[in-house]
Image (tube, rainbow, N blue to C red; front, top):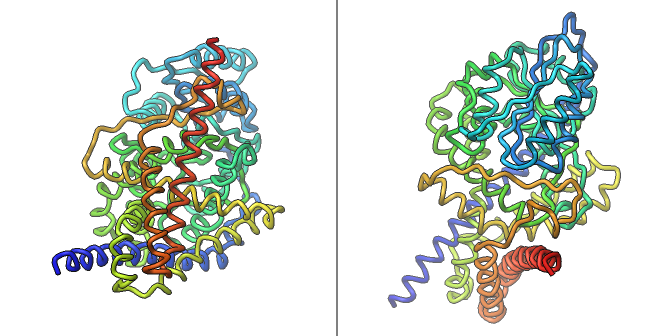
Length: 487
């Protein structure tokens, strides 16, 4: 009797986790409908007349980017904008030979009349937020354009983006869409490209078009100085300074404009190990913003719909935690022969939302959409597998562990095995492997005791196994290559 009571209690936790997952899936249906309705509005309007171009400060925050720093500086120097209205800052916190390359490239362009300067900090105080804040305080500019090291802004970027601020004096930020330099490099980049497209083709279009809260993505966008200052400036108390500032600005009454047809190419993480680092920072930072801004959001003058959608947006990484719980608590449900307090059709319908959103987004953004969306299975498995490291980030955020801004390594097409920034496998791969074994064992048991659950459980097992194997394989290639170089 006691064992049965325990199993029933765990089945309730399983039901709660999957109901919450279904809510996120059903909400994606809602956002997809909004995106379809507002798609045309997300396209840039015809160029607005600008009587006098405002002053723009272009900021390039970098840290140990030896492979891409020169490419970034060259692209910034090529921006087509009145030189007397433009100022470019290379905000370098590097500790390797990036400093020499950056300083030399800045000197090269300065000698040719480009209004560019090189600023190097000895300490990474405040990380990227600190660098942006110090650069902003050191130079004038009504607007600030920000580009991370892995981006290549097109020459006409400023001339196409700046006019949108004239649509409304309360537009505080204008965000462009991210494109890709290496989408076809690996199975990882193909999957990430789909996920990123989904953000820019569905989430941003829906939220921007319907007047819901969205976020500035930290790169390939422009901010109005007055907006940044009124919102409280750049802050380093979370690991996602862009997300944090976006919400503080919108709570203060500012708006964000998204332009889906202005595209800035960027480099995607080419290995699952680099992706984990990036996702850990984003997830932990997002949960920190949840802790920081849930109260101000609920007390704001925003509409109830804006608040609800804002909370769902802020909590967008919680499904990772829910997926881990779902797998862990699946065994008790199997032992109860599939008895749960929820109806499985709810979860089944919610699972249709991601692939439908992917297909629609690809049809809007890519000519080869009928081929590109076929990478969805890899994205699906990767999303399941990453839930281990993402869950670790959520726990770290809630327990207030010290922030350490770990950059995502960029390779610029260099061989991942010989790259100086190549990463080794970490503890999460071992946990993923254990969960995969647990999932396959539970799934096998489900075939006999709860057949309806078996497909769901096997999907989790495949996802964790897929990510673990990729991590071990890519790390092994790096170690093998280093050993060969030594020999």
